[in-house]
Length: 391
Image (tube, rainbow, N blue to C red; front, side, top):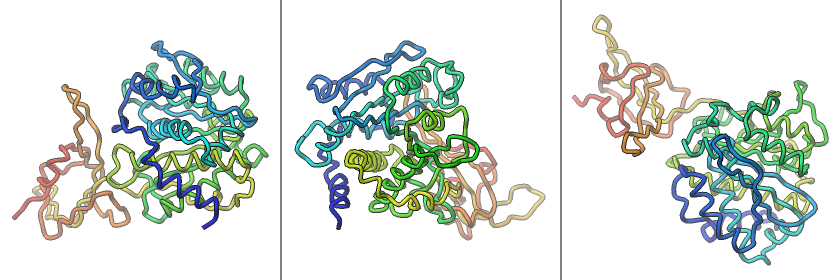
């Protein structure tokens, strides 16, 4: 095992020593996040800077770590319900504040200046919704800059002119990797800067970092890394920040079995980001083979949360029963007591043999309840078994 691989394996193996244990759910507010960050701020391990205000008046904070010549901007939760990387960034603060003689953290602190905005859309996070309180997707507001959150991000980029940027998101957890039928755990992208999708020196550097990350992640989630659609989006921040001269890498956290709160993917983000920062700090990313990024399969969508296989459905009194599969996706619904309930929605009926699911139920030889199985019908997850009639 190479020294680089040993360092990355060490990050993975020692994660439990550094993670912030108070974070047990992906649903949290800005107030909770600020409380978790306060010890690092008070100890002087990070420098907190107010960089703007949200539409509802919440202060948007940026944290600076290190004093090296290469500046790296990392921003997360521009969509309020995409917190996986936010959790990982807080774990990274913990890592960088302990045992400063450790090789990776010393190199990062000495060679990089990290500019970290862990929660760019605090109003959206408060409601656990994608959009800002204005109901605008701020990742489509890089041109008009109507939202204060979008103006904040552009002002930070223009003021500090970072060399590298990490645009951190969560994608639909049901994406799959190309034709593999494997769930996409992480999707990577070095965004295009125009319709031609050509490679400027800025984008090529981003591709090398993405290749480095893809190669490293294969140690832990082999076959579960995809490439995000690289169609140029002129309103998006990743595309524009790349165009403005910051080598930008998009990291999208997808899905993983039995990981609804994204705790495993939080760990994978932690390893991916720290290894990438280490490679930028010592410039080892420059040796990365860009083909490791270019050859990643694109995201596909061949996965449901649940598939009931081979049941017999008599959908109408005038027809006979036929063999079908039923695809269902889960949705979190907050009830009147603010408890989170899982609802399963029927999204497809028929031959789903080319699809996979996090959970599969064999209904061979049994009848399905035609009264409940209708497209877009919703049923509590705990009652899924009632869809199969026991005869």
